[in-house]
Length: 90
Image 1 (cartoon, rainbow, N blue to C red):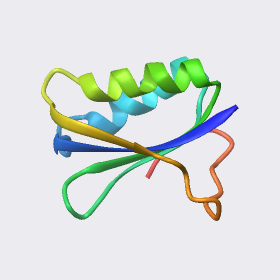
Image 2 (cartoon, helix red, strand yellow):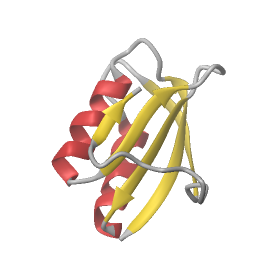
Image 3 (spheres, helix red, strand yellow):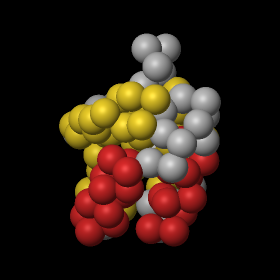
């Protein structure tokens, strides 16, 4: 099991990006959350098997058809963050 924090930049708010992430994460069996950030980016915290996290990262770079993802940054999930048992949209 692994965990990762992703931040997607570009036109990712107001285009169904969080719902897209939720569907992908559910399909991949991941737990965590997705939320809009004040700077216009979208943050994803996810936990699951490494292969599923890799697939999620590729999906985040693609996004839904109306989004324009410029880049996705990946980092570790801070140790003090407790992830939900399911995947949630915040």
